[in-house]
Image (cartoon, rainbow, N blue to C red):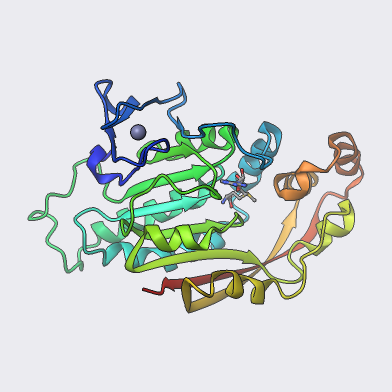
Length: 308
Ligand SMILES: C[S@@+](CC[C@H](N)C(=O)[O-])C[C@H]1O[C@@H](n2cnc3c(N)ncnc32)[C@H](O)[C@@H]1O
Ligand SMILES: [Zn+2]
């Protein structure tokens, strides 16, 4: 794990800077004496006060997401996110760039970004002089923060990204992150708090957002009664970020998937509809599905710059 000073974290109680305490990387303390111990799985719980009204993903939903993503069906999405996130990290003015994955889930896409920058950094044609700037021997370079409201997700994320600081927190609250301290914020199918993302991003930083396009998973929606993609989602994305962010570029990605009954069930269960789907009905559906189902995944990966 990079040194604590590389994680620009703020105490969720008093907003003073946090640093690692006496217990190595397992305790975070602020100057006012607030202290946070890592859970045994390695994540930190920053939810304070009376908690949140938001419904966190359940252990079953997170397990479905982990199983589905482990199958590699969305690998090209992970690659595209890494393509679009890596440049602002490679060009970061600070010695160690910082990436925040908001709504990190199992940490799958943050892993892809960290692997990409580790690779790019090791590439021989890099302009930077690796020996002069002291690249750490363990290959950890970027400082990563994974934030999610689900502790079940964070348990997985802490295992997936042990070099990251994985934090249970609510994206609708002030983020426990210092101003102008982050090079890239990634938000993959997760809630977007534009003013807070703009506050934590440095000038020249990037917000990378993944949203579904019309027709995304429509075959699965037809089978399970999942909610379809609302029209004009794209315009809503721009409008919701408009005062704080300007669009830089966008890439559409269409995947034609051939999925097993278990994959289809996991896909249905892992999204927001999982909160409302009946597990028993889903098992019955899985049993009735043919060996393979064709499913279209339609993503848009949008890159925004904060307006200063
Ligand atoms: C559809 S999942 C996407 C997870 C991950 N980005 C991925 O694509 O695999 C949405 C995630 O947002 C998290 N989430 C929902 N509301 C949140 C909030 N208010 N604050 C932080 N995370 C939240 C959920 O717990 C869940 O892990
Ligand atoms: Zn404090």
